[in-house]
Length: 223
Image 1 (cartoon, rainbow, N blue to C red):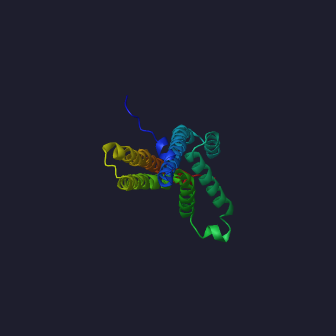
Image 2: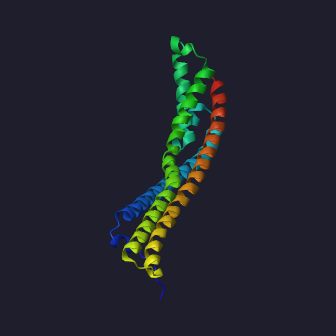
C-alpha cells in the first residue's frame, strides 16, 4: 500500500524546532479561523441590521418616532442615529451657553457625527492586523521548518554515510510538509483579510451616505 505522510514521526524524532514550527502554524490557523468566523458574522449582522432599520428611520413621521425605530433594531446605523440625535438635542439645550454658541450647529453636528462614526466602525477593524501578519509570515515559518528539516536530514546522511534514496526521502518529505502547512495557513488568512477589508469599506460607504442625509435632516429639524 501507499506510505502515508506521518506527522507523528516529526514529534517522535524529537526535533524541537520542527515541532515548534508545526505548533506555531496550528496556533496561527486557530487564530485565523476564529477571526474569520467572528468578523464575518459581525459584518453580516451589521449589514442586515442596517438594511432593516434604514427604511424604518426614513419613513418615521417625527424625530422621536425615528429614535424609537433606531432603538428597536441593533445596527451601526441605529447607533449613529441615536448618537446624532443626542448631539442635536444637546446643542439645542445648551445653545445659549457660551461654549456651544461659539460653533454653528452645522459644524457641531458634522464633528459629532464623524466622531460617532469612527467609534462605531473601529471595532470592525479588530483582528485584521492579525490576519495580515499571519498571511505574511506563515509561509516563511513553514519554509524555515523545511530548511531546518532538510539541513538535519543531510547532516544525518553525512554522519551515517548512507546515501540511499530511502534515507533521504523520508526526512526530506517530512520537512517539505512544513512549507505546505505554512501555505495552508497563509492562504485563508490573505483571502479573508481582503474579503473583510472590502466588507468594511462598503459598510463605511453606506454609513457615510446615511450620515450625510441624517445631517441634512437634523439641520432642518424644527424643535
